[in-house]
Amino acid sequence: MDMEEDILNSLNEELEDVIDEGRQIIENAELKDRFNEVKTDTELFIRKHPIQSVLLGAAAGYLIGKIFRS
Image (cartoon, rainbow, N blue to C red; front, side, top):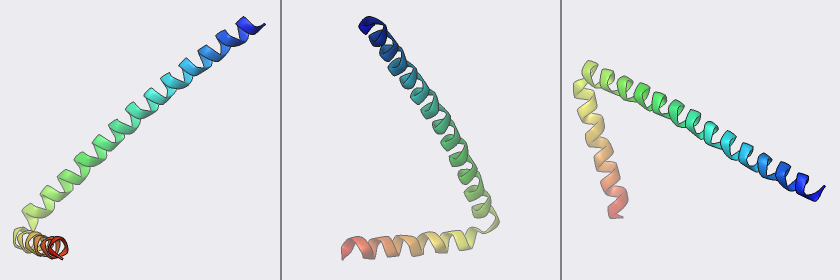
């Protein structure tokens, strides 16, 4: 009985590892898709509103500079 339990436990551990790897692959693919969506949306915003984009970037840079100098 002990040997059978060891085999079953080993198989269960391997199965859990495979499931975890599959889950990570799916999550990474979804994350990549979401990143591409955000990138495309950002590019479209910049093309539609170039002046506001430059001003927003300058303001963000100024604030980040202030935060890190403090």
